[in-house]
Image 1 (cartoon, one colour):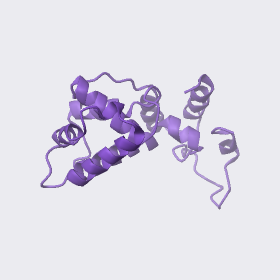
Image 2: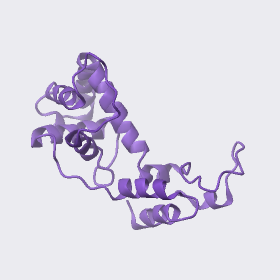
Image 3: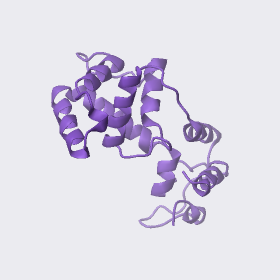
Image 4: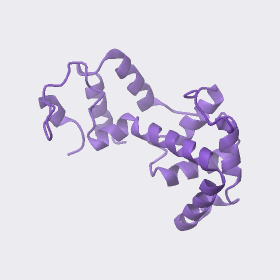
Length: 176
């Protein structure tokens, strides 16, 4: 994330268009830095490689593996899982252990093939992990900024809701 991107994101978050609770939640995501807590080093390195392959991103900017690891350590979640599935942490560990030993160093095509194999062998864990990574990526203020998305800036309502219409302040948000 460049300094200009961070400044633009903070400018919108600190504007009257964003409610206090939304501002706090997005600021927390923007500033989140994680240390490994749930997985061992090998499992965490593998999770990071899987996260980067499934949802291409720079972990230095958005730490999706750290986000998952932190959530599992905290024991939080959305409260839903398949009745015959183990808890997320155990399901993810089984999924990651099913990958080849050197998954992190494989060529992208070989990583994709390995991921397809574990998707077939552990479809529910794979689906849950992919959904969690995607949600984390899309809910991050940097992703939203880069996509030009400002739907969270709704404190004052929307007057221009037609196709292609933008609020006057909205035209200045996002990369040009």
